[in-house]
Image (cartoon, rainbow, N blue to C red; front, side, top):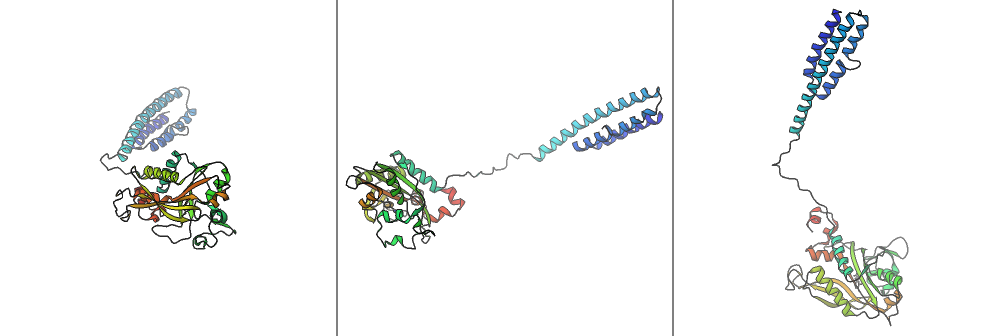
Length: 344
Ligand code: DAH
């Protein structure tokens, strides 16, 4: 019996000693397994109790229970202390230095083309225009022939148009072919639509032109649509887009699908028409091509030109954004320079 009591006493001393040196939660858990676990050393010693006499057994049993309780209490206390110190060191390691300058979060925002497009569609939406979606891959007929482009018109030539492998199928060079689609869908009802979207031209990229760009087309067809309606609509647009007090002017121009045709200028909002670097000292900036829908085009759309008239206009979205935000090179728009995209 004495040997087993001695073993128990030695175990207690060793266990308490080892516990003091278990500095982490992990080590205290390992300690529990080694000394108190189901296969631990205390259990192992107690397994030898079978050999003891009936008088010895309760004495050893009582002693074993005392040691077990002592060790469990010591473990509990030690674990609390370890958890506390672990938390303290974690806190000081993750400590926040409130004097550090903040890291700026860069916010995403809409691309300037998207912003301009939405501004434009909002303005015309408030004038009762609906949006009509037309495809970027178009027939040569819609893009040219039905818009009254005479055979051999320079815009039909190879350098302007992207062709596909399919005969007569091209990438649209402007949003105007959507006029034919809208008219054919709605004729003989009156129309007031905006046709936004991408266009493609096989041209050299310069400060003013990209191969891919956005346009928005407006089309109104009705029984008594006049050029002064066109002027009123565009004047209202100019004031909403570029600030109250804008003036517009029409200069005569030529487009195959309108007659008469004009180019529309808005008075420069930076110098109020006085002349400055942005307007190249003209006082005016061009915003749109426009005109009265050509009778041939009306007829191709399914309207009788004797009864119906209409106006149309088409403008480059990037150009509107450039003027509104004083950007002097269209190539910024699609070169993905974050500094530009954040600024405008
Ligand atoms: N489609 C012409 C272009 O891309 C712009 C244009 C001019 C559209 C006059 C029109 C218009 O609707 O009436 O250059």
